Image 1 (cartoon, rainbow, N blue to C red):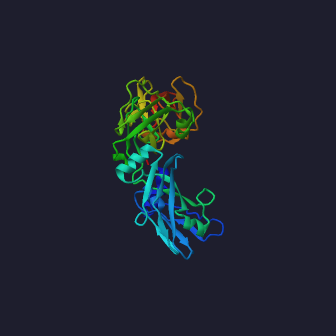
Image 2 (cartoon, rainbow, N blue to C red; image 1 turned 45 degrees about the vertical axis):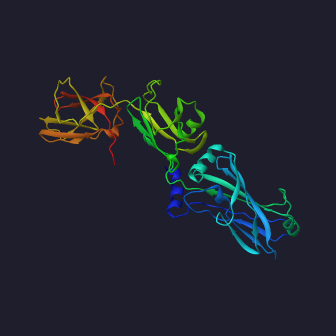
Image 3 (cartoon, rainbow, N blue to C red; image 1 turned 120 degrees about the vertical axis):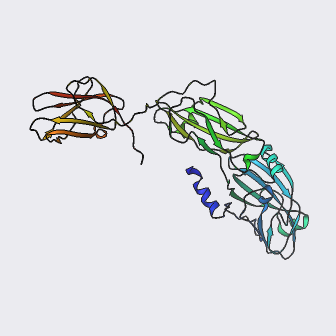
Length: 383
């Protein structure tokens, strides 16, 4: 979600398009053109001609504009030409209320079909280039502006259309740890383009290598599974796929396509398949015995009761593996009183292995050995 933060900040401020205008001049003529910022929730080809033309000629000039719009993804979208119009001395504000974009040719048919149906282009980034040209011989004579690439007045700007709702992944959430080996996937459609009947989705799932991030895996790894033409916002785990492997990490991404043209791409999310944890409850206090073959489950801490019949004021104890190997732990003696004593030891600082077996040993003043066998379970506490 972090990739969309700056865009939503712009939307909050009410700035729906960003434009960086440029100026064009030809020889010593006194004509200039500046593209106007585009504001609004939608962007159409007609909006591409919005500009201000400045002329210091004393007579009106018969001129027209050509426009070329390309997607931020690098492919051309459309090219068009306006009807002839009069450029008057001074400042001339040009927009769809004053000039008509009468001749339109869509280079990308999918974008063209979308605009013809919805009245605007899909939300996204565009480069808009407009050229000012003479429309008759009188203009040529006054300006010496001949109709070729070196003689036109040209301006280009980059515009970003804010997508009210981008394509968002929903489940499984990013960096999730899943116990199911066959997860289902779901996402949230981009709006308003998500309502278009020609919009479909492409789903990609890859297995990640050790220490590999999701973005790298999506770009470099061969897809474990990929499907196009999805019309719904969810995908049950594919029946032809084998179960995902415990201990492996995976990345997934969804693309939205208008016809055959990608128009939106989600973030890349990751998840890991982990072993299903058995439900473990905190152990009760257990009374130490000289012989006890039972194995107790511990959850982060060890609780026991020891009866002191000697004179020692400190309880010394050891924790070993179930096979009797010493762990060389730095264990501080605990205060001990005569009679019954209850103790609780936090096992987390000792680096014990999750789901491994250990034994607690205590030696009485008489040299008798009291022991307690346990299986250690570690559970991270939620903040």
